Amino acid sequence: MIRIILPPHLRTLAHVGGEVELDVKGEVTQRSVLDTLEASYPMLRGTIRDHVTQQRRPFLRFFACEEDLSHEPPDAPLPDAVVSGAEPFVILGAIAGG
Amino acid sequence: MSKVRVLVGTRKGAFVLTSDGKREKWDVSGPHFAGWEMYHLKGSPADPNRIYASQTSGWFGQIIQRSDDGGKTWHQPGTPPGEPPAPGPPKAASNKFAYDTSPESGKPLTTHQWYDGTQHPWEFKRVWHLEPSLTDPDTVYAGVEDAAIFRSTDGGENWKESSGLRGHGTGPQWQPGAGGMCLHTIILDPSNSQRMYIAISAAGAFRTDDGGKSWKPINRGLKSQYIPDPNAEVGHCVHHIAMNPKRPGVLFMQKHWDVMRSDNAGDSWQEISGNLPTDFGFVIDVHAHEPETIYVVPIKSDSEHFVPDGKLRVYRSRTGGNEWEALTKGLPQSNCYVNVLRDAMAVDSLDKCGVYFGTSGGQVYASADAGDSWAPIVRDLPGVLSVEVQTLP
Image (cartoon, rainbow over all chains, first blue to last red):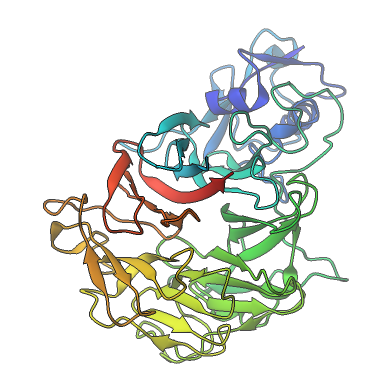
């Protein structure tokens, strides 16, 4: 199972309390994880990726295994630790302000 | 006994304020959608328990929320109220606002003017205003940034752009105001289901007479010194338009500077600023029963977005403009530096007419006597973005 940590506002929207666990078919990539997430929680469509362009929303970042994966290609495989469920895929709201 | 329900959108959530017809004691519910910018909430005239809300965020984009029980509970249209959705393909796309670029009905996604005068592609950012149909609770219009109008006929589950507006041909001359290039005003004509008015900052006012298929600019008489041709067909920063439903051909406008009126459905406008201390401002509204009684809140200037002289004053004209009186009873008259944004004033239809407005400082003021006296319903909400009122049986 793939573990996903959502920002608090998106947990509220999706009616979930803690981590989300998903069974992702095929290769585990940003795209396949987000496609599965949106299929399971359709109210999140458009909140993480733009509805039309499918680009990551500019104030959101993707982290895993203490690495910033935000600028990795969406079809690049995610780290083995994410695939095995040892580490979560973290969707984080960028911090702005001082 | 009649009731009123005041729907307040703020920078950090929504609030629902209710009172009986005396409008003295208020119940406050909220924050709903805490932490999100709530640009606008509005109830359906055909079913007052049906309320639509625009929930938005720079981080997470646009969410449409709907209540079917007068604001007690909310859900995203297409998602069962209060329940996690069943796994499977999405049944709806209530937060999907995709510009129509289809060859049959849409127009190529063109460009508009950017702040620096260069051309910039259209990009959806948020819904500024929701206008439910006068007759069908499931039909609702959305005015969005970058400027366009969308319509849903299934209770907000799916949205389709009325692309004739954006495709009018003058798009390259439209430009964003300080708040973005937003379509912020939608007025439905109760005497003609095919006629609608909209306004865009900064493009101006437009009207359709064929249910949204085609649109024409209605800006003759507007003068704006901040565009190359002050009398241009488009490019004007219209802040808000108001209409009394009993007299649909008469419109009142608060432009960036200048208060205007039209007696011919927008075909031409004349200035009615008269003796206002400043004619910059955002809100304008019309008394529910006296169509020549109008309200504005003058703001000092476009570089100083607060009320002049530290005094919060609503100005009322009972002559359809030009002659204005300051309404101050119950409003702070010293050290007050708030703003009142374009969708943050509304009237109820009780007798006497109630008038309501919200400020950037988080106060929502109500007058149960058509503006003669005022009292705060709440004083310390987050900054108010919008105020709408429902008069309930």
